[in-house]
Length: 138
Figure (cartoon, helix red, strand yellow):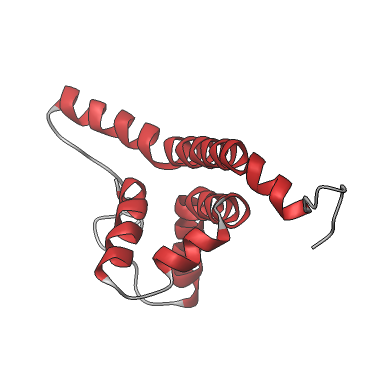
């Protein structure tokens, strides 16, 4: 530890005094990033689809497998490539949001919290991890 005054205060002592405010700011920023990413990728588009389904009393969507055709195409490299392109087009924003959220957790969540509560297989760790992932599932 590095002493910075004659009273014996250390850098870690000063950091611990600012810790509650910094932790609150980091958690707020992480929450905002997570909510914004999930809202953009999942919640808002699904809300629009649900509203349309409620208004029409039915839900019609094009299958990613058939591409609007009645039957899926015969197995071929062209069909596989077409499916891969359609699938990528459907999920790329969710993958990007997942990467952004994971980066926010890595950068903003206290390392001790992650190690203490999520690094084991106890019931508490499973419940916390599930509760943290639950909003992303809807």
